[in-house]
Image (cartoon, rainbow, N blue to C red; front, side, top):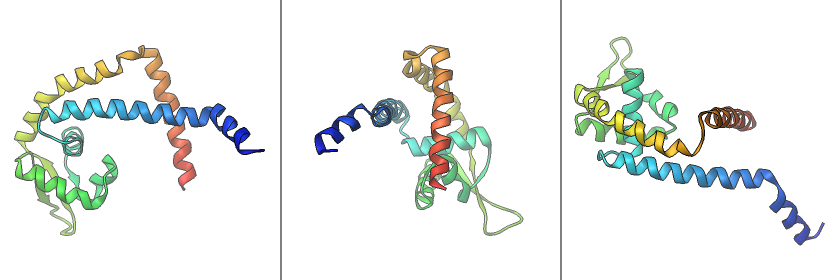
Length: 154
């Protein structure tokens, strides 16, 4: 197979097309969500940490990174920033001195309580290009794709 034939074969491959379309969609959606979050003087990582604590309660600092897909070295920086803003506090574990929890403060809860109605509406608007049935199908297909990719990494 010559180079031109290989190029044509790649161009017709739906795997490559899906990758490109998925990447572009993720970037477009991510940019809109980032813009929405920045209205509240938070970056997406700070918002992710606060959202995690708001919905799931206190979390060990060591576990936050894996739950919001953040490198462990960045957690300390983000937690420091949120602590300075008064949105979370560090709480030592009473039974294990090696563990410190991040805990959302009342100020952090009030902030997210105020943000969520508008943020949710923005997410709904972003996703309004699909019907509910299409969203459900997309969820199922993307989960399947993600699980397959996850198994390949192991």
